[in-house]
Length: 354
Length: 76
Image (cartoon, rainbow over all chains, first blue to last red; front, side, top):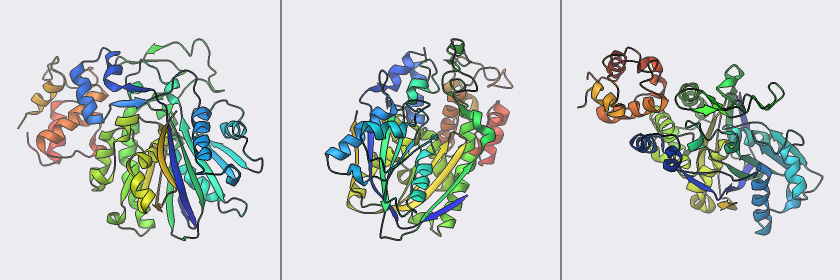
């Protein structure tokens, strides 16, 4: 499914990271995993440090902290926001929507559309598409898009495939109408037949959490997790990404009539460095133009990795000018989505700690 | 140039890879090992194995790995 927009822009991006930092090497010691093997993985996959929340920190805590920073610094005015879109897989509650929780905690105006969308690693592109569609309305001039997750709280600490690389974060992206009519192109696909490749089996209405679903089980390969925990079929997800993402980007650039050389950076979701290098090689894009250093510095925080990629790697050029960015996310659903647009000059582009 | 067997032994020295026809089913290579194996093959032979070729059936035994390398013009 293709989308195109014009007269919209990203005004600024803020990343909020938990101050609590863990080390991959220290985590792997808990798995009785040979140090030499951990070192190889660290190099190949790019695992090193990751940020995760402590205690009962929720998505709204990270987001409210970020909004207060933006309001206090005068970077965004609360009464300018017409819509609040929250993309998360780890809501504060089933009911009410986390967007309403954030709106209420910040005392934002009532004349505002609050919306939650359950999405994961494709959530930044999905959120931008949704925000741009909202901006087609005369009554909506500015949208706050929040991509936030605290999924570390749902990952088994004894699952070495997921725990040492999971990250938590909240990103706030302000999207608004613009006089500039530069085209924005996007595409998106979903395949619900592969929905179990990334799943938290228990905790919803299909399989409510019980003492039984909290029992940690041996799932093989020295990994232990409960049905209440996140489960990822890593091989299936890896193959899905390698098969689907390169043709998606090719199709997007054709739609935009944009040669690959005219894209300044490919800002992709970052599950691990190995996967990104394989994508870059397949697309014949240099590794420098497809940054892969987010997972090694902060971990994989689902829909927050692309905006974190932007705030960590491109803050200076985007605060001072414009870049043509091709963004792509892929994961839960399964969902894969991409967007190419000019980004900058931004009013803010920074990372703060919670 | 390293042989395929040498690359495998470098990853999991505790196993005899000449005795198995399915390293994954026999528990000799886990998913992390497969990633490490592909990375080592890339480096050893100066190639970049496509992500779409990183499938269990392409790394399940020495013959399968050699066949995969043949696709990239390598005859180890």
